[in-house]
Length: 567
Image 1 (tube, rainbow, N blue to C red):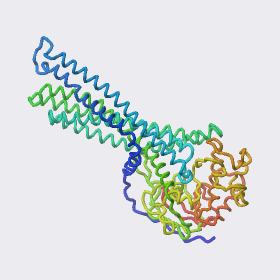
Image 2 (image 1 turned 45 degrees about the horizontal axis):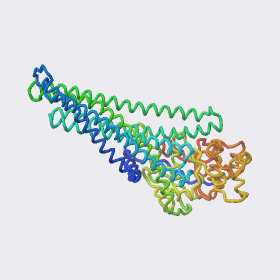
Image 3 (image 1 turned 135 degrees about the vertical axis):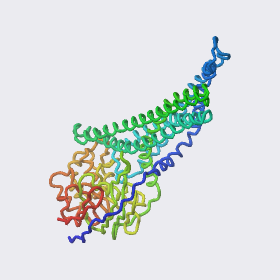
Image 4 (image 1 turned 180 degrees about the vertical axis):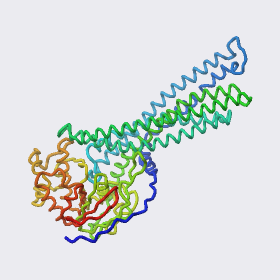
């Protein structure tokens, strides 16, 4: 085969990556309609929260009245006038605060449980509509989203509504009261409030990025556990993912702890400064003793609630990470439900212009792929090589519609591929992902075979993918229903490979197609891939496996590092 002219990689000026604040807004826009049927417990919880805040704000006032004679320096041999009333008022405030807190938690739980239950139901319906191969959803990842993410979302909502909203309102109320009593002392607390909120927001963003990684690891861990039950329990993949998941979880706890310590430091420093200002003001006669008492009573109460606000506020990052994963599943299901746009077969070229895929990690936004400019002519067989983490899998998943494009354009002839729904792309694309997709129903349906005996070409594809032994092992052959532990990881990859080759696709995207094949099957499979009538893009870790391809591209750190001469 003649190879096209080689092109040198072009350096593209890298623009600063912007944080994806719109993702959080999109999550809330998707989830808010599910909250409407549960408005009553929400408003009851809001009323109870206001009662809790009011009780907390009134908490020091009876004590101030009781201690007022001593605060003024008066000597009282007997209890001050109205001491019993002050005592009863104090007891009433404490009792009201306890009852309001109980009722608030009860209504928050009812609201959160109902809301998340409806979100989970919609996510489950979406999972039934989505082609798992298009989203690269393994069974463990799906369970992690439907069970783990919804559970964490529910816990996050409870924490947010119970602690963040209530303590935030209390924080604001105390600041206003202190500003009205003495603007200098109030300004110190206002400054502390702003700093604590800033630290909390920063911690939430860090936690969000890290928690996205953690949930992906836990999804892989669930898949590995499922595979370990079928294969060797000490499989290296399970041990590696298990260790990595624990490391990410430890980092999550460390981020929360760092945010809490920073909040304590800010509040302690501001309280110390306010103490110096208050004593100086009292000495000069500007601040009365009872105002000073009120300030420090509120300040001592505020530290505890402010730290709660910061700790729970940081956990918003957890909630949003889980919410985003569920929102993606729901959105994919809704796209699949719509009338699909038909994508014509590729006839001229597939063109990537300024393409970039950005991922969130603990250090902020990181480019997983790009900037990348690439053109592939229809019918070309292109191998993409590079070390682990170079962007091969990201490129294939992007073209399959499994990943969102952060910047740039992807042209499929004249169509904008990045604007099309996943279902339209899947109709023209056969995709073998790095993870086995979620198999459901029968083996025949998973392979995309019609009724009756497979034809000669289909039987040859099944043989080339090493599925002969699997068909002999399964009790009902192609009609066998595939449960969660029916296939090993190796067998699941072979089924996914065969499904991609059996599809009447004009573009094949294959991630390590020669991995986990039986002895002797590699050469037959290579001939079949190179003889495919459409366009082929294969990700290969071993450059030696690229023999016979029209072009061999090399990726490094998500960028095109060059084009090698095909063997």
